[in-house]
Image 1 (cartoon, rainbow, N blue to C red):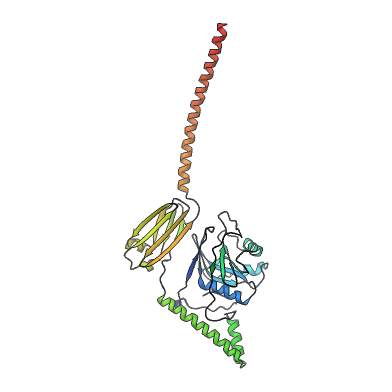
Image 2: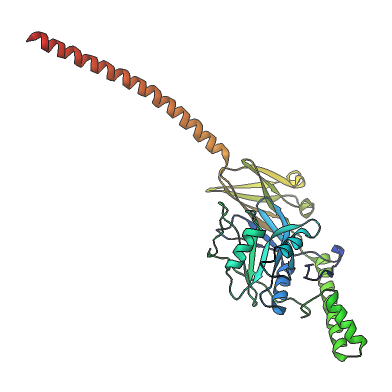
Length: 345
């Protein structure tokens, strides 16, 4: 469940729902971004009630995967350093600020967002989300050298309208107003309270259905460990599987391997990479997930190249010494011939 801008936040117990994530990738982005669908809908909901809201994205970084789980609007302006720092410091438990979001008329970064990223979110993995009021959105991430290109080619996705109800706030402020209107005998108060109650029931039932009958996920991921990548998955999702097929694409090389029950029970597979771009696909029990690692080039090929260059350098030094000896011998022969010419005159 996403958060809202109020201090008092409506929360549902994890026992009643299963959080749904989707994945965003782009050729120019070194990160794989997983975002909670409800978090994106929360941004769109905020956009429907305010002009140009901005706020903070919260989540976690796991290797090359950045997961966005919560959002909070910053009620102050973009230049209020204290307000942004205060909200960033009060991150939800287990999460950290991973970037900012902004609602604009077009899916593009403005100088305001660029300045906010530079001041408040300087880490190379921290990102920006830009969304229009119509729900078109894209993430912006820094490149390998730490620069951020505001005109980079985007992978735009659509965010559907929030289901259930339309209030611009879900927290105690909205419910409080509904109760106050109801106590005053206002029909509008009863109608508002009814919408709020109906919306909360719809969300609760939807999450309950997802938790009871929702599809399992392999939770496929990769993490860098030197020149190796550790491929991991949720062991519970494949607990009853007899086999699985993993496909690894490392640069131009492709490898397919069958995993047995013992492999699946370990929940991980270590792979010695040859390039900085590795894609993995895992299929088991009707589940099919893929992930991609894009990072720094492996060091082993560099070390091999250095050793080859050192060896070649030693050969050149030896060849140079031989050439110098040959040159000295030729020069001495020229001198001796000149002496003989002088003696014959």
